[in-house]
Image (cartoon, rainbow, N blue to C red; front, side, top):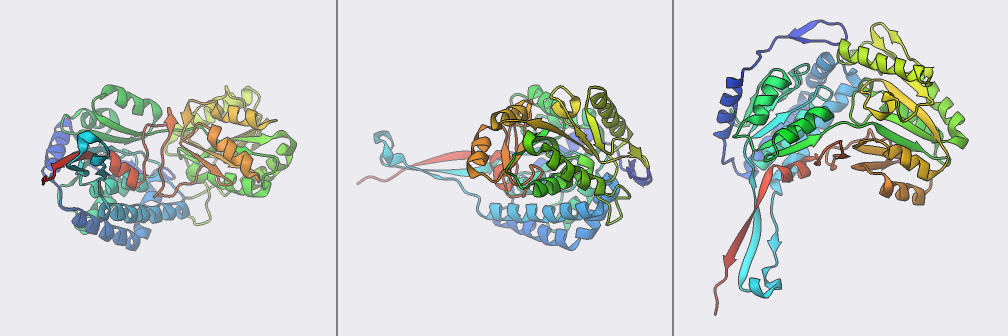
Length: 454
């Protein structure tokens, strides 16, 4: 059963797969190898992008209902999904290898060599609940462009967006059976997909422990991981404090903070900490908590009761350890209030682990080196942000922050769908974005030709 996290209403019932269904899905998908030519794949992706644009409101409503993402944010996700397919179509049309300069050595003289890209095979895709449409798109669109059939297991709490996207792809001309969807719990159905011998690549977005467990479990497969973060933002004494507060208040609480790159730890230079904190607290106080279907709602509920209880428990631990609640901190109408804490310390779970809830914490620092040390003091490394007016300071920090991406005068919650997106350390081992995912989903094959002599 799929329920609306806001009011608990039943949205749909879907069949739970068995392990034998995974076998059938993989076998059916594998029949679509070799794939259609790249131009045909690009045409499917282009038609899909157009249909996603035409069906954007239905897609947004589905996201809103099953994930309780505020409708304005759900519309933004639907628009990004269209972009993801548009960029994947462009990459499909330009899918190529490279020429190898054989004559640059004596041993290669008289030979012509180049590489071609071939699909790796059936892709096993496992997606999370928080972006139930666009994170599915970031697996399906590159796979289609690469020529890989897919078996998808969407998050059990939010499978409807994926189902609607699959129907859209069918209407766009994706060959029947090239995309298979299996519904069920991760341990059973996801595990069967991970372990299937005819699935050479697993693309997983989700929790850090589960992701690295998959990597350890299948060392001989390609396992592309996009995992969590405890996202830091550094605010320097020369920053535009109002800009920083506005951006952080928006990004830290989008979808109730349930994003791998939600702003979570804010490090503010001590000389401007009071002023910045006042700006940020005012903006957090102004956020509207309520029904996700209301256009005016900024923050809705977290995904389920277990997530709510965990976040509230972490807040209690933080305040017991000395953190100060500046805004929110409690529960209202069954939802966690947008919460701003000050005086967080690195050992608090709201700092050192991923909250995945509507919580932002502030701490002071004195020197840029201290700010970088605090930001890097985490096992995660997805994205980080800096607010400063000094180019030299921004670029120096960007080189010393150990993250997959660093944003300057923008929160690290920012993501454009054509960019390389991925983390280091415990946050992942690959980049998403159509161009980068296609490279993971294809084998580069070297072709060497002996040229005629004389």
